[in-house]
Each structure stands twice: as structure tokens, then as C-alpha cells.
Image (tube, rainbow, N blue to C red; front, side, top):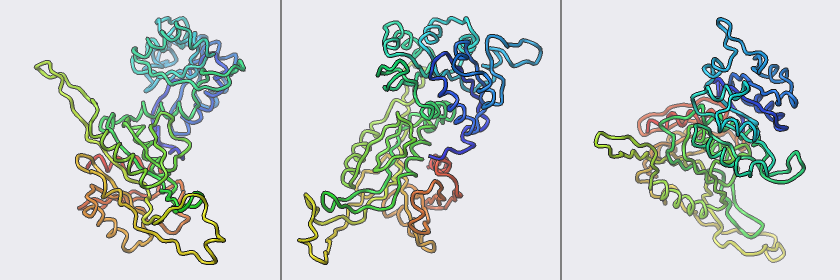
Length: 424
């Protein structure tokens, strides 16, 4: 997925690195953050310098690193553990060793990194990295539990071969995954936060026999971009698709489907669950009773559902010897998913791809009344080469007006779609 260079523009991140072999991944993490427009400053423990030199981080961030040897309290200096925290919009520690986790859990501030953490008043993110036995130690588990209730967000480790050659949980999450957690922490939107949102995507696969199928060129990239944007905004996302972008956040909920009937089944179930609501916000009223505000769910129907399917799909493989030199494949009209689902109490945005530039807007506009939806995102395609690209241009069509989204990378387009959809 192409990440916009202004996604984290003007966001300030203080990155703490500790003495783990995984610190080499932090260099890639810095590259991802700065490439997305963020300003990054690094605070290093002395143990971290055994693995990576300060110069490496200073080269990538264009900022001096902060450590135990160079803190400054002179006039107008921001190079100390108090001013660094005041500067930062987010404090991230990646990797966080078992030793550092123990210090944080017990408010021990005996080095520059732990002093920064103790002084930073907002939510902090940590990405642990340690041997499996060290992480599974009851004391470490208790420390992580303590941090979980003390303004820390913990990113799960991976199961893989560790530096000690044993296989188990303990490897630090990949830089891309940590990047998504940072983006979510920095870009949360109160409107979308905890709101249940369903996104469908990809071209459905309709069976002819066990080796042949009917489908289309839809890549599922726009749906994946929408799901990623919603994730960053803090929504409770459910992506139902036939194809997924490989760079999606790992903890984004995904359902892999093939046929339109399978998509309809999971979509119907997801809508039913979404309408049950979630305790998204609680306000203490004067009578000391909790007043629950339930956020209305959204559906973005970006899937390209096959218009026709085989009338008689076969088990096994059809043999050309038995079919002869010509074969008439009998098709029947497929179910219309948007017309089949219950759209009451859920804001619904449809998607339409058209190659008829002259009549595309009129055709898309008819969908609003015909299918009983709130808006349509129209994509005018030139030819089949338009599928699978990293950019898109959308006409956001409402019953009474059309709002244009210019040609941009698909994640940027997704964020702009969400801004228009908020008005619904």
C-alpha cells in the first residue's frame, strides 16, 4: 500500500530504543515514519548503543539523539527529558526489553529513556522484544499487565525464530505494524472512534467447475485502503473481501471470502452484529446514571460482485473431450447484494465503476434511489489497465450534489471519502 508522504505531516514522535538485537528494525521504523511526514527524535539507552550507533539515528532523523551523556538544561534548550516529552505528540519505545519493561512498570527512572517515559503524561506505545521465557516469566507478565492499565499500549510480539535460535513468541513486531499503531494513535477521530464499520472489497469468484470460475479485474486495493484509513481513525473495522493488501494492519479484522453468496452470508451477519452497537462513549449525567451514546454503523460496499454466475456449476473438472469444439456456458443473473441486505439504521455508501464517461454520473446517481443507499463513489475507468493501480479519482455522489475527489494515492482518496461520509 502506498503511504502518503503527508499522512503524519507535522506529527512529532519521540522514539525510545533499548538494548535488544531488534533495534536494527527501529532504523526501518524511523524511515517509515519520516517518509510519512513525521518528525522523529530518538532517545537511546546505553545498552542500545551496543547494537546501533547514535549516528545512524541522527542521519535518518536529522535530529540529535538524547542519551545519558548529552542532556542539556541551558536556556532555550529542548534537549532534556522534560522538554522532549513536551515536544512529542507520541512516545514510542521499540524495542522494549524485559529490563526496561520492569523499570517502566515500577516507575524506576535511572536512565534518560525511563526518565522520559515517567515524565510523559500521555498514552505511550511499547513494542516488547525478548526471549520467550523472559516474556513468559510471571513477573514480566505482571509488569506488562501493570503497564496495560497505566497509560501504555502494548504491541504484541511475533512467533518466529529468535536471535537465541529458539522458536517462540518474543520477536518485536515488524516496523510496518508498529507504524500503523503510531498512525492510529496520532490520527484518531472522535466521529469514527469505536464506530462499527463494514467494508467489502475485491471481485467475487463464481465457480464454473472445480478449476474454472467467473470473476473480474477488481484488485480490492480501494477497499483495503478504506479499511486502513478507518483503522487509523479508530473505527471498529470489519473488512470482508476476496483480496487484501499485504501491508494492512495485522490486528484489523478481516474475513476472506470467494463467492457472492459467501460474501452475502458474512455481510448479513456482520450487519446484524454491527447494529447491536457498542458502548462507544459514556457520559456521567447529573443523576449519576450512565448515558450511552451508540454510534450509527457504516457500510462501504466497494466489492465488485459478479452480475452473472454459472447456472449449473459442476463438481470436478469439465473435460474438453466431452464438451466438444464449442461450449455454450449457461449463465443466470446473480443476487444483488446491495438490494438484499437490511440497510435500516446503517449508513450505506455504494461503489460503482463505469467506462461510460458521458453517462457514468447519471448511472451512478440512479443507484441511490434504486438500491436505497446514502451515497455512491463513482470511479470512471479508461480500460482494464485502470484496475489494480495505486491511485484513484472519485466522484462522491449524493442525492442533491456531487463532490469530486482528485487523482491521488488510494489511501489519501480513502481519507477524503471518510471526510465526505461523515456528513451523511
